[in-house]
Image (cartoon, rainbow, N blue to C red):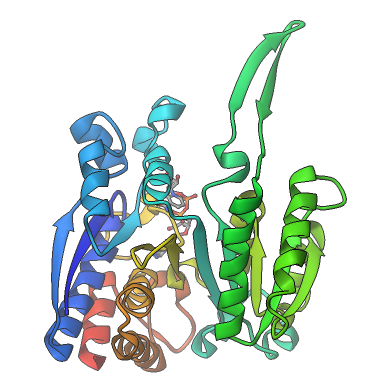
Length: 356
Ligand code: NAD
């Protein structure tokens, strides 16, 4: 197959980790007889420096013309003083919106080799952690109107949270369909005891649940979900939730699995084109030092093969190679443990390539 991949190396550690993922993709192409063509895209802080804005229209066009997008990470202290409308993160929001990506999917999976890195007690971890958070990505409070006004001698800020039925229904369906491909269990998380958006969310989800009698469906309030994720994460298979709750819960879910550097994600909309990126940021504290863990980005490339390119054997091969590198005791600094060997970002890439 021939695939055109838009590559956003981004800022901070982005270029280092994306470099390793591209080496892996090249090896996959060679082994399985595919051709991957890469188109470099400026987005984030580097695009502000070069073009004065975080996502120039021409860059978005190139992403829309690609078969999928691979992203490292964007942002950093250099651009913290930018006005809110021109920050690197705005590029990311514009990319998700422009590509119509309304679903962000994050696996929270404990790699057995890294069980000791989980902050949870062994008695909880030994039950296994393997669930997936499906987060609505282009609606809710992040995309509502924001305003700050001066009134009665003080400032007052307002952020609008809004959801329409069709926005809930399309992400709800992704939740149910994903559960069908896994252990057939879906937990919908909301705050229906307080928020109108959540009451509408729940009504739409209940309507959908009737169409999926093979999926064991339940509702959970977001505050309870935050507790249950640390108390008994083994109860979850697929969690579906709105944008703000999903942002917070998916970060909590990733922390309990050990290293933030290990976790990939996909963002999907209509059609097969997706955006694939590790869940972490640009890690400015270790940028340029060849210390970053490239596995989250490498596993994102594996997800791209699986979900956008229909290449399950290629995805399996990448995941197995990662398993072997961990089995061999190789660790980057973020997940270093007693008895393991500390390796750099490029050495981890070398090892994974050697196991492919
Ligand atoms: P971060 O995820 O960049 O870093 C948090 C901590 O985790 C740091 O100590 C960092 O060194 C470590 N870390 C992260 N990824 C790692 C990896 N692959 N290997 C080893 N260690 C790793 O979060 P932050 O410090 O809050 O944010 C830094 C910048 O990244 C900010 O500008 C933020 O806006 C941006 N950000 C971007 C994205 C994105 O591009 N999707 C996501 C989150 C944050």
